[in-house]
Image (cartoon, rainbow over all chains, first blue to last red; front, side, top):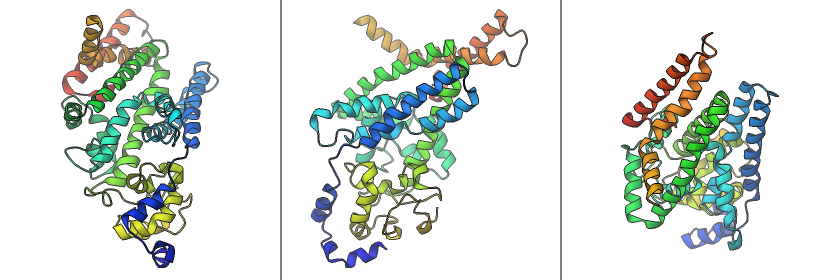
Length: 306
Length: 68
């Protein structure tokens, strides 16, 4: 168990400085896995469209396949939002936005918009007035999160007010929203053009899969890790399990590592947790005391109740 | 430049309505072929796009952004 590590001499210094020093050893690489997933799922999505339009596979099969691939479209953008796709290589920074945006095409979302709001989520996690994800995070049931994630973007909603306030006080946020707005309009038009020629295909291969994927993201990426937790660097995210293999939850069961150090790549989080666990336990991170010594591809399910 | 600004303003204000007419109208129209034998009549097509328009207007005035 993690507590054993506290006894290890290498981990006696549990200061913030030491924590940062250890965390830094996991930062800086190019997360090539996310580039492969981001471009790969998009190519698959196009192939599915092609197979359905040519009647090689039925529409219902295409719908299931598209829903599956679309569920993979957000995380590569998320990696790009945090600069993981270029790592420490400044000349490759373009990868973050290019791959991030291509990856989001099945979700019909703008990378710049998601980046701007996501970084505010990190800055104000669980703040009811400032966290853009708050509306679909702090709910009583998973289905409320699945629905709220679609309903929160109305022009009269709380999220719109937050965006307005962030735009007034943060010029770079405003610019990002404007840049992203162009892509949003582009997606609006793209769907309106394609639907004229392929109405049911557009509905079952694009609109419905992205709605389902967005609900999945709301529940697994936002609600489960943050629901009903307070503000605070070491208190706003939890370790959790819903009994499914970690891979099927996009490893969001260990999302707490991401909130502690967003610069650590997604695929390096298990190793980082194993090393930083004594610090996490010391800081009182929810669920840290139940994390096994090895964070494997299983779901941590033996140590958690969902 | 002014035309572009006007265009973006129009899309910002009426994008959901256009989306209702074109996107949902096309889907309603395509779906009607599975339910009605004479769905290729002009009246069916008009009805489908009218339903789309109604949905778009409802979306605009009730804030149903989920239709997009």
